[in-house]
Image (cartoon, rainbow, N blue to C red; front, top):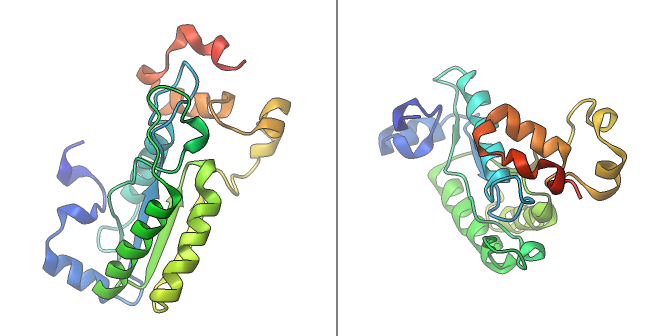
Length: 198
């Protein structure tokens, strides 16, 4: 994708464009959150970040260009201390990630945006983003903040998940592997697929 073809990307707009968008009573920014952490031997470290980028870009491509909804750059590195024992995992401390959300969120509010959606694809930071959203609301009460998890509310998801996924979660599971095969099949190490599910 070339920069200008990225749908509704905040960073490719000029400041007068941002000023106009922010002044709209429905102005909304989406801030996607992923992670850089192990996803078994068969999926890339950026699995969560890739999912959130691909899905949100597809959704935004369906929106009218003049709709006051934009996306700021995805936060690829998240809170992943539970995976720190695996080579390749990079994690931020919870305090740093929370401070960053509060600081950037305050600036977004000061610009004039009315809503901020913290769209998260990494299950290990759901609580952290909920807490950060509450802290942000306390310093920027005019900004409506909505922390959301990518896999929550997916219709019929529980009916297609395996017993192991329902018990142990989706991390590097059949669901995540299937989604990666659908979105970026070239990034799936197929010879390690079976090993990845044990």
